[in-house]
Structures are given as C-alpha cells and as structure tokens.
Length: 497
Image (cartoon, rainbow, N blue to C red; front, side, top):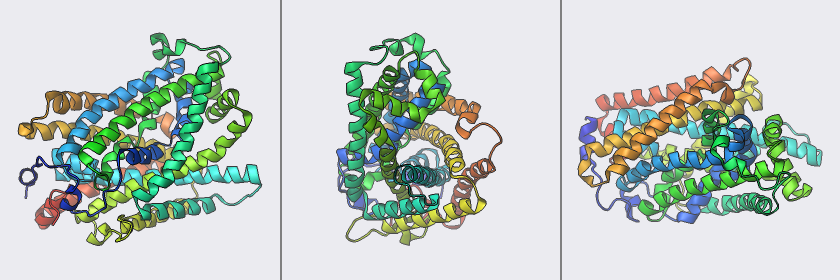
C-alpha cells in the first residue's frame, strides 16, 4: 500500500473537528477541556517563572543585550506564521498525534513515523531532563532553607511519583493542579512588572531597549536561540485534540493565544528586568549570574521576602512543567498504541478518569529505566540537564521545519480544499525558511547550548539516540509497508478499525 493510496483514502471531511470526532477517530478519550484549560495546561509546560528566571536573563546576557525586549515579539511573529499552516492542518485533519500525524499526511508515512518517534523521544527525554534539574533545585532548597540534606535521587523519585499520578488521572484533573501553580507564577511576575512599570528603576523608565539600535546591538542569532526555548511546548496544543471540546476551534484559538501571550509577557518582563537592574548594569549583572539577577530585580521592585520565595516557586513551576511534559509524552505513546505501532493495550482508556492511563504508566516505566542507566553511568545531574536541553532543541527545530514542509506539500496535493494561498503556501514556506536559518544558527552556536569545555560522553550518546529513534521509526514503517500493509495504513491515524 503506497502513501498516496492511503492519503487518498483518508481525505478530510468537511465535518472534521466536530465535537463528536474523538470517538470517530478511534481514541475514546473524553473531550472535557476548553480553551482556558488548554492554555493553562500548555503554559505549565512553558513554565513562565522558570523561563523568566532562566532564559530571559540569558537573552540579555548573551544575546542582543538591552534589545532583548524586542526579541520576543520578533520570535513570536515567526511562530505565529508557523501556526498559520499548523492550525490549518489541525482544522482539516481529525487526528491526534500533532507532528506525527501532520508529517505523515504531508510527507508520507515513513517520514511521519520516523518524525513521530523523534517527537516521542523529545518529550520523554525533555521530561527526564526536567526531573534532574528539579531534583537538584529541590535538594538545594531543602538544604539551604530547612537544613535537610537528602540525595538528589530521592527528590527525583518523588517528582516521578507525583507526575505519574497526575498523568494517570488525565488532563481534566491536571488543569486544576497546574492551573493553580501557573496562576501563582503569573501573578508574581505580573506584580513585578506592574510595580516596575510604575516605579521604574535606577535609570528611570528607559526607552533605549525599545530602539532598533539596541535590537541589533548583539548577536541576534544567539538571542533567537535562547528566545525560541521560551516558546517550546506551544505546539503541544494539538496533542490534546481528543480531550478538548470543539478541537477545530479550541486548538487554533489556544495556539494563537499562547504565542501572543508569551510574546508580550516576556517582552514586558525583559524590559522590567532591565529597568529594575538599570540599563548601565543589566547586561553585566545577568552575565555574571543569570538566576541571581532575576531575584535581585524582584527584590528591588517588590521586597526581599518575595525574592527569597523564588526558589520555592521555581520548584513548583518545574513540577507543573513536568506534569504537562509527561502528558505530552503519554499521548504520543497512546497514539502509537491506537495506530498499532505499539501494542494495542497501551491505548486503553481509564473507565472513570477518561485518561490513557496505561500509556502514562508505560511512560513512567521508560523514564525510570533511563534515569537508572544515567545514574549508573555516574553522570552529574547538571550535565544531564544541559546536554539534554541542548540536544533536544535541535530536534524540536528540525521537527517544526518538517511540519512546515508537510503543510505546504499536503495542501498542494489537496488544492481543492479551498484554503487560502497565505495559509498553505506563503506562511509554511516563510516559516520553513526561518526555521532552517534557526536550525543553522543553533548548529553554529552549539557550544552555548551544550556547554564549553570537553564534550561530555552523554552528548554523542544522546544525539545517537535521537538519530536512532528516527531510523527505527522510518525502518519500521518500511517493514510494515511490505509485511503488514493493514498496520501500515494506520500510521498517522488514517484508519482506526
């Protein structure tokens, strides 16, 4: 069975995206979440407080300096252009799976399953990276504030237990947990922003950060590299297709809201951070100690006590992020189960919670296995976090590039669907060009992501793992095309019986 044959047999209907479509495409997950719940869920993935403390400061320190506030709307504009084609696929294809489903539909099932395997690995390994970072952050907090000195792996085990429980319960339960945490994060940063906007800083209310000269004052490619990390996760809206009401409207709406909200939120925060530190000291202060610079700024605008709360809030922020990342990883395993790429049993839905509970347990089992292997190798937690984060941003940029190309090819092949040239030709090609440049910039500045000095042995191993997951997915699809054409036809959720 060829890719062209299966694509022709699965042309999207005009009713794609109706509220009842989840049952039709074979999943059976309960559609309970609306736009606000989806936005909160994905905001937890982005972890606004962690982003502000850990990446906004890096854009100022190593990117374009005082011009950092303008970098976020610029990156947001690129992602909005990407979202135009991305959400066109959301509306036309009544399938969960996001990257996996859309690349399968546009570029063929072989590339689709290869990319799907990489996406699943991206979320799984990203979650593991967060576990290591969160365990060290919690260890430091407990030791410094309460005098409790336990090994880092005890906190990692606690993180895995809590996250797995929440993932087992499903998105509707998670919205209440992560929504509360995200709201606290946003309120803290919003209070800092409002006070700074009114009071100013040591140099008043500086206008220099909003000028073209400031924007071009440093390496824009490096600034873009760090900035794009702050948006990582916005694309996961489409993963929850079966769990939201009216997905053809909810997912595009939530995607656009997230990109616009994050662009403005981080732009204002960057300006307030520069203002609170002073334009004459902001770049040096963030370069000397990025995390401490954010705490200093908070203490200046709010109070010393609020600054001290940041360590605790960063831990809860990381917890919320881990819950959402686990949900994303779980849903890829679930989609593979529905498509028979993995055993069908993994796609079972909990009768009471309406969640893919077996996929959640499988995700936890793989996570624990990988963590044990890393621990046996004796790799320091900080090295794990840096290397995983650096390698995985390569994977995300490559996947987004493939999605942009898939949108263009799919709608060129299905030109009679009536979509505008802007949505399915101009926007996908513009975003593909921008993402190709970003991928090149990331490769040429890899030392900023992977760290300077001797390359840890984990770096080539992880690059190898990502490459092998693509080869495995691609090869398995090729094998199915010859030996199991019925299963091959299911790849990308094209058929479900």
